Image 1 (cartoon, rainbow over the protein chains, first blue to last red):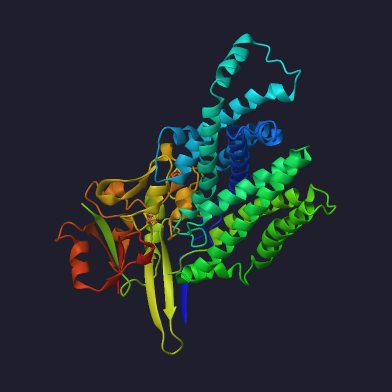
Image 2 (cartoon, each protein chain N blue to C red):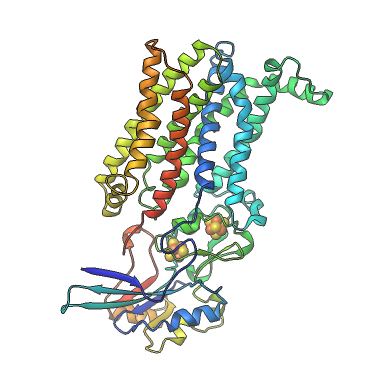
Length: 313
Length: 177
Ligand code: SF4
Ligand code: SF4
């Protein structure tokens, strides 16, 4: 038997008895980032494919909310900072080894792009829209010449943003649950799936909903595969990662994870989408709403559980 | 120059003098500490083994905390001492999450704080406060690049271990066993 105790009574707030440095802000920020990334990816992709008229929600309507999502995400990140007055220091350094740094920079680039994209499309959605000032009108006219490169930049940056939401966590070797490179692709796919779900909810065209239900189904399948893969990796890894996976295989997070994230957030929406494709009568809002809920919960569970996993010495 | 510290687990009695000395020397806010004592009991009665460790930031040579800091606030200073520049730190907590030893905390003023190896004393040629105050003289501090420093000499003579070397951080706190 071996017992290790801190006998001098260390009780540093948020560190002891167990790390709790990140609360709701970071998982909410990761969710919003992933959602925005998903929407912008589809907008860029279908625009480049020349399908703007076929998929107007994906290309025009849904991206209008992304500047709001990104700004809200940054507000959450800001709220999480403990030394807020020095926030600007994030933008006086570029540190490629620090995901927090290049993630903040990615957001800095994708935020104006998403705003430009929204501005380019707002007139076709609201015919009565008037920019009032001539210089704005001219600027938009000028930007319209570059809509294709903008779409490309948006698509590439959205993939970086989506992956970043996972890498932010996976870069921490100190937290065995996070320390798996699967987390990057997993969060990217999950973010794209929530993006597709948001498009389904906003869409009024049956055909568009149908296409995105198919896309979502594929993404959910990949996500399930990656989740299984992640746990297989943990089981075959070092003791600390085996311990980390125990939290989900019998430990405290078993029920919330498998019932709510995997069951309600992935398997049931997938089943509903299959039923809808076979023309069974199901309210189309249910599946995407569950996907969004599952995506949000997934990030919360990963953020909290990850902080509970640690090295023992 | 490579500053390092060695702690003799056979001499340490767990009196916590080093903890109090650090709190006083560095004006550590009440309720916080930069160093702490771990007591390890191994085996079952009556075959028991006891180990006391005075722990703190390991001033790792490959520090995840320096790597993940987005602003460069966490950095290597003289002799590899890992320091935090207060007015560069945004309090994002990335470094706290990245430290496998949980050696950091957020100061009530918002920036991240931790052991500095008493760099302000070391630069004047003094010992860190914890080392200087230890009643059993169980701690050794100095430059590993200098074969005649206290820490180099004791590490050469004795068996030692570091904490979770498998985390790849290259810790510079040596525990003599
Ligand atoms: S012990 Fe922790 S805080 Fe200190 S240098 Fe290593 S990783 Fe950084
Ligand atoms: S909390 Fe401060 S020192 Fe730590 S990573 Fe963030 S900016 Fe760097």
